[in-house]
Length: 177
View: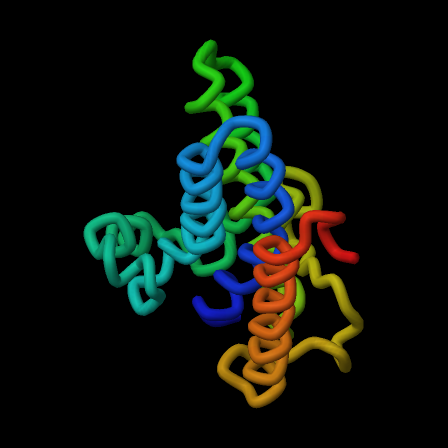
């Protein structure tokens, strides 16, 4: 999935969370959580120098390549957001923990997006089932990255984001209806 798809998928799931955070904690905290979720949704592709985030952090991206990290491996494994969440849980600072949880949630959303593609994710449940490709849909329903099918999905994610955004802005009775 391309950067646009990852950001739109993460945004669609982030809106209800930031709506809750804004009501209970404030708008600046909600913005920080939103940014952390979006950052997390981009972070797993740091292992690919040609990706959006890999291009911004070339030293890290090429460093991962040099040590032999292949795309959609360690940075896409479930253990990464689990360890990040566990670290956040161990901290005494509520706000830093919340940011770490948001980044971990963004990573999971990124993984969901990649599991919709034909490539899936190898070793998602590392160290268990390390040689298994995980995907969410049957192969016939999955799409290739940069394909017309992906652009159609991105278009519908854009519409969904617009709908959710306007529901949050203009509707005080409930989140979706």
